[in-house]
Length: 213
Image (cartoon, rainbow, N blue to C red; front, side, top):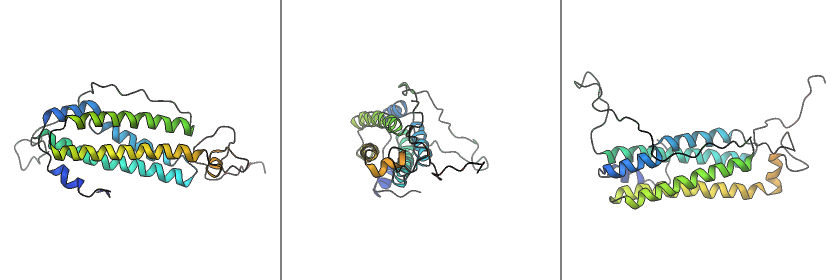
């Protein structure tokens, strides 16, 4: 469905052997795919709230990377569970749903959402906090993995999460450059609407037009 940097990861995940303990651990630590999908939505949504094209592209790529990862994680969980939990057509099987996987509440509470007030630095630090927490939990799951293919899949997810962390640090550094500061209303020739607030919401037209003119 998506374009992967590592094509072989699609083959690895199909060869993962059942491991219900690792399955339960991933479900507890990461709430299945829930956290990753939520973060992907936030990255992509925020990308359209940015004036600078480079920042926009970086956040879109981070969101797409998350979606890629969640496709891999979903298939990894399916393999680890080790039983036929697919949905069947009622006309082909006596049971319309052979087995239903009920979502359970994670034992690990997710940090409360941070209020960033449209401020770019605050948004970056909020993402960094989440990514570093996910990275720590993925590494804990990797240590418990006994299957070589499952370990390869988790290693892929760890590398992908680290790539987002690197991107976020790079965006923080670029924010300090004069050329990019103009995108955030922090330079005399700013491209943004408000030079006082550092808003990172998208301003497609930087000029103010009064209806009275």
